[in-house]
Amino acid sequence: MKLEQEQVIELRRLFLKANTKEDLLKVINKSIKYQNNGTKEFKYISLKTLTYYANANVCKDRYTSFEILKKSGSKRTIHSPHLILNKILKALNLILQCSFEPHQAAMGFVKNRSIVDNAKYHLNHSYVYNIDLKDYFYCFDLKRVKFGFFNVPFDFSKNQESLAFFIACLCTHPLDINGELKTVLPQGAATSPTLTNILSYRLDRKLTGLAKRFNLLYSRYADDITFSGDFDFSKNKDFIAELDRIITKEGFEINKDKTRMQSKAFRQQITGLVVNEKVNVHKGFIKQLRMWIHYIEKYGLEKAQSIFDKSEIKPLNAKYDLANVLKGKIEFLKHVKGQEDPTYIKLNQRLRACLIKAGRIEENLTEKKSSEDIKFEKAISLLIKQGDIESAMNLFFK
Image 1 (cartoon, one colour):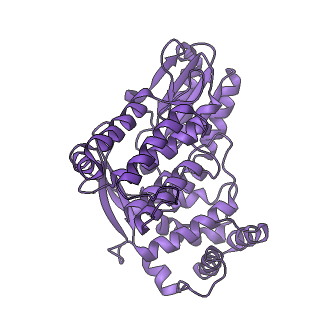
Image 2: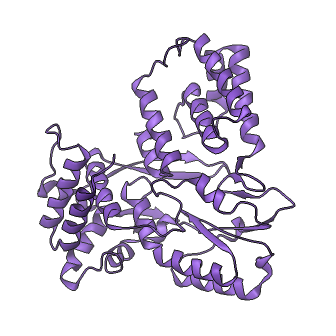
Image 3: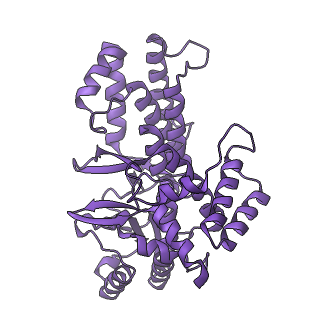
C-alpha cells in the first residue's frame, strides 16, 4: 500500500505533536483510514480498546505464541498478536515509517531493500566479516523503547513522556527470556522491525563511521552485521577494539559463535547469499529445488507432499503446501539470479509442468489460486520486495 505524500506528511505531523493517548488514537484511526483507502468498510479503534490492549496486565490474550525450527535445529519463538492488537500495531507502524527515515546501512525491514541489496553492497571484496548480535529483538526493553522517542527524529518533549510510555507499552510484551521475565519487543509484532531500526540508528551511524575510518563498507540486516574490504581487518586490533566498544556501549552483545571472516579464496556468504563474483544462491539451494521437483515428476504431487511432510524443517505442528513452498523458492531464485537466468528458466518450466499435470495450473491459462495461495504470495512479496521477514511470517502463520 502506497500513501500519497500529503498523507505521509499529515500522519507525521499529527504524531509528532501528539501529547496524550487521545491524540495518539486520532492519528492511529487516520492511519487505519488511509490503509483502507478511505472506504467505509472498516471499524475505528475506540479509546477503551486502545487502552485495554496497551495493558499487558489486564489483557491476557495479546499474543499467541508458536515455535519454528531454524536451520541450525534450534527453535525460534514467534508471537502473533491478537487480531485487534495487530490492527492497532499495523496502523502505528505506518505512522512510525512516515516519521522515520532508516539509516542507509540498514537493509532489513526497509521498503525497497532486501537481502539481495545487502549482498550486492559487499560484492567483489577480498574479505567479508560477519557478526551476529545476540538476542537482538530482546535487547529492546520497554524503557529503551520509551526513551527512543526522545531522540531524533521524534524529539519528544518532557510533557510527552507519558505518551512515550504508553506507546512503549503497546509495542512491548512480557516474555520469558532465558528464564527471566522481560518486557521486550516481540518477534511477530508489526512495529518491532521498524522500532529495531529506529533504536539501532545510532549504532548504524557509529559503525558506518568506523567502516570509513578503516576504508571498509558496513551494512546491517536486522541482527546480521557485515563489513567488507580488501585486507584482513579482523587482525587489526584497533578495529576490533573499537568495534567491541561501540557495540557494547550501544547495549548489544556480539555472538562470538557466529562471528567469521571469509576470504575470497573460499565461498563468501552474506545473509545466506554468495557474493564472491556475483550475488547468487548457494549450491545447496538449487540442489534441494531440483530434488523436490524430481520427486514430484517421479511420484506425483500427492506422494511428494507426503514425503515432504515427514522430512522438511518447518514450524512445529504446521503443514506446508509443497507446491507453494517450491513456488516461493522459484520466485526467490528469480529475484536473486534474474528472470533470464537459464537455471531459473529450466526449474520454473519443470515445476510448471508438474503443476499442470497435477491440475494446479491449467495449460496456457493462469494458475488456480486459493485464498491460501494468495496469502502465501503476499508473504513472499513482503519477504523479497520489502525484506520484511516478521510481517511475512505473521501473515503466513496466522
